[in-house]
Image 1: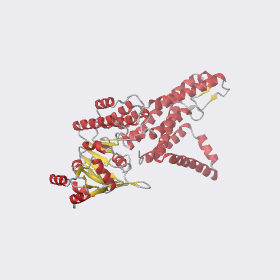
Image 2: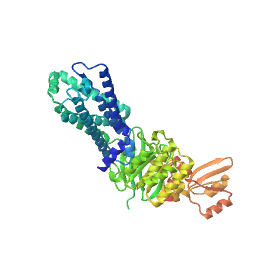
Image 3: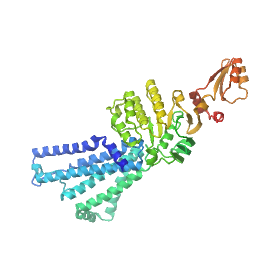
Image 4: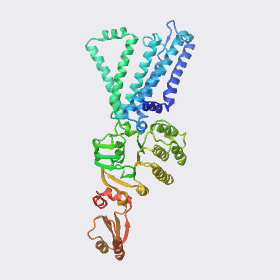
Amino acid sequence: MSTYINVVRYHLVQRWIYLVMPMAVLAFAFGIVLTIFALTPAGPGGGHVGSVASIFCVLFVGGILTLSRSLPFGLALGVTRRSYYFGTVLLGVTLAAVYSLAITGLQAIERATGGWGLSVYYFRVTYLLNGPWYLTLLTSFVGLTLLFVFGMWFGLVYRRWNVTGLVAFIAALVTLLLGGALLATWASAWASIGHFFTSLSASGLTGLLAALTAALLVGGLATMRRVTV
Amino acid sequence: MTPTISITGLTRRYRHQTVLDDITLDIEGDCISGLLGRNGAGKTTLMRILAAQEFPSAGQVRVLGGNPVESEAVLRRTIFIREDQAFPDIKVRDAVRVASWFYPHWSGELAETLLSDFDLPPNRNIKKLSRGMRAALGIVMGLAARAEVTLFDEPYAGLDAVARQLFYDRLLADYVEHPRTVLLSTHLIDEVADLLEKVVVIDHGRIVLDAAADDVRGSAATVSGSPAAVTEFVGGRPILDSRTMASQESVVVVQSLNDFDRARARDLHLRVVPLSLQQLVVHAADRSLENVKEMSA
């Protein structure tokens, strides 16, 4: 365990990437949204924006960096691949916990102030992040972890197979999605898929995301086992 | 006693080439060994495998009695400093601080001393360091870690002569106080010659020489003079190389010469110059040094 914690500390030497940047990006995007809605007030339905996604993107990039740029020195310090991987996952989970708490807290303030006095839906996202506080906390935690872990896998694929590998990896993912779509079309299953998602509650969706995260974790670990630096 | 590093039949193949070809090598406890060879001989790959950064295609590697791959017990006691180490976006001081968390015998005091000896700016981003400064940073970490197995791959690429001397001095001083197994790869051979207790020469992925440095040092000499005298002197001795220039012939004799031999050479008006380690390695790279191995065995 102490090795995992040391790996987390190693990553956090780059405070800028993991602590400052996510908050800065979120605050910046939020500032822009507030400015826009202060100038052009939201309509009767309220101002819905999706830019809370910015923090999810930053965590994805953070995940990539942990296993692309930071890996060689990490392994040079005599950390096993396994410890490095799980230490980095621990970092991701910790960051996701911190930022999901922040999102939940800010969402509560947003509700209490009538959308910051401007009817802005910034920390509330219809269907995804609009339930009770504990669901917001859970869904954003799982979502942030998912993107961080996904980023880790991207970084690892780049480490092992370079740009060619990364392109192939992305192509494989797209093919997988496309194949699923084709399959759904052939089976004329779109209606039932639509039904599945609309009837799926936010908590059900969170469960689905958690399962996906677990799958990504396994994929990443398998890629990690033979990575060289 | 089990050797600190034990390599058996190690082969590493990449798609188009065999970088390490059936290497077998033992390095016993506390000593400073030199891993010498030309660029691309396989030195870095060998060390990367010892540090579990790379995997063997075949064969077995044991460090401190165990397989280093995914072994916290082995890796925690091993440090590998390489010339082309990639760093994240961090400062000199951060790198040293991070390294101190991972090595149980880390000496913060030594690290501080070395940082100032090498004039390293602690608050500078590693990406902004010159090549020599980056090498110095590696040396600081490699020595301060006091790891039982210390692997230095070309540790002073880009360092000036003064800094290199500083490295030799510090390495030796700290080694005397805290003996450990140091493996040093380099092609500045004559500079480190006095430091080494064991010499391993690797060429095209094969070990061509593996001997105690003292045995190697006196094991060959260049004899030059008139062709007739040289031929008479050499007689049946094993030779490594011979070349004729104008009326002079010079022959590399692979045999330690005794006083009688030297007196005879003087009578024949021959010049006898012992081969330096570097010259030996050059010859070793030319051909397999079977003769030398036999002589020093």
